[in-house]
Length: 209
Image (cartoon, rainbow, N blue to C red; front, side, top):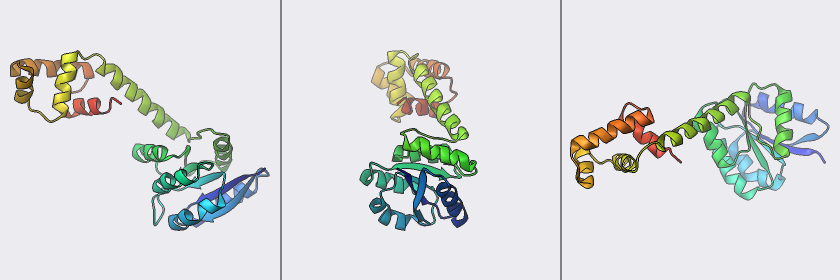
């Protein structure tokens, strides 16, 4: 059985290049090409491809939004983003939406073929630069969790109240202590979290999960 692949890409030249290299493989066939998101949204479900190569920045719709909608109705189809975007927001939005892989345009075509095979087998293919960003993100998250664990119960409570928008005086009143005591707690929090201001401390607290 050949791997059935659909392409959603509004750059006609790149779309055709993908189709050509896919159809050249004995174990693959391109069963559909779409040049806009609207048509893909209307027709992909009926085609039921095994793998969809999805661009992010389509002229009419977001490829990320398409993946989010289609993964609900096409549970047996694997979606792999194929895009020029390498920023964290796009990467993690796509993965949260249900994409199983993320490739950067410009990858050699043989790498894209390998990625299709990997995705079809249940893997999560990513360009090297994307995999590094994902790894860095989780390593950074681990450091944040570790540094938060250094805080005492009182320091965590003070930080939580700070994150809620309370002023030093309001926190002091709630804790029944002086403002100087709260300032000392906050100074210790900054040192343990390795931050220099309230915004950075709150961001680390909010991103703990």
